[in-house]
Length: 368
View (cartoon, rainbow, N blue to C red):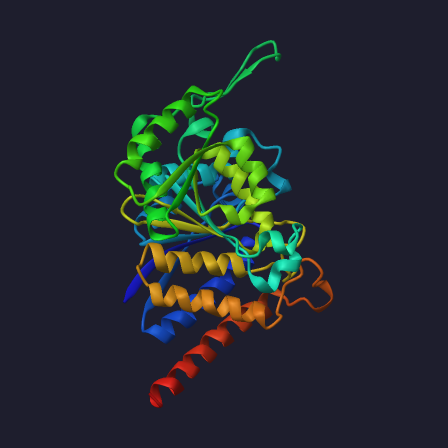
C-alpha cells in the first residue's frame, strides 16, 4: 500500500525527531510491504525565515495533496518579538483551521518502566491510560480578534462556539469512550460560562445515543486537581480548546517527560496531522539529545487513525515499550542522564526492536 505523507519538520528539535520517525516508518514499510512517500515543507520559524510567513501557500498545497501530515515542532526565541500574525505559532493555528482539524487526541500512558521518572508517586500513576479529546478550532483562540483599548488599560478576547462545533467534538469523545473503557468525563466551567452551559446541554443530548457510556460532568478546576490526585480515574476526557490545552499539558507530566507524548489532530474523514506534544526545545536543538519517542508514537497514531494500519501501529508501540523495558532512555527522563542515549541511538534501538520482533514472529510461524 502506498501513502503520501506531508512532512513538516518545523523548528528546533522538530527536524531531528522527524528524521528518526521517517526511518522508523520506512522500517515498518519494509516489514509490512508498504510505501510511504514523504514530501517535506516548511512551517513556523523556518517558513518565516525562508518565505516571510509562518504558513506558506506551498505548504498548504503539499498537505492538501497528501494522505496525512507529520509535524515536528514550531517556535523559538529568535521569533518571539515578531508581530502576532507573524509568530511561528500562527502557522500551527492556521494549518489546523485550513485543514479542518477540529479534534485533538492526546493519549497519556504511564509506562511501568518510567514510573520513577514522574514527579508523582509511582503508586499514584500506575495504570494510567487516558485519552484527552480537545476541541481544536474554536473557543478563545479563534473567536473575534482580540481588541485592545486605545488607552492601554483594557483588553477583550472572545470565546465563541457554534452548536455544530460542540456537537462534532462531543461525538468524537463518545466514540472514543465507546471503544475504550466506556467512561466519558466532560470538562467545562458551567458555573460561570454560558458557552460551558451550552456544552453541558449538548453532552446530555448526545449521551442518549450512547447508553453504554458512563458520562459525568466535571468543572475544569476540579478536573485539574483530580489529574494530580488520582489520574488513573480517567478514561476519556472531552473538553473545549483552552481547557484541553491546559489539562493535556498538566497530564503530560504524569509520564515524567513531554518527550513521551504523541498527539493527533483529526477531521471527520480520518485525515489528520500528527505531532508530539513537546515544543521545539531550542536549548538542545542540534545536540542529538532530543527524545524521539513522542514523534515516533505520533507516527504510530497516523498509521492507526488515518491509514487503518492497526497491526503496524501496534508493532511500533510494542517496540517502544520493549526498548523502555530494556532500560534504554534519553536524557529528558528523570534520573537517567548518566547513561542516556542520543536521539540517533534511541531511533536505532526502536528499529532494531521492530526487526527483532519481526524475526521472532517468523521463527514462531515456522514452528507453528
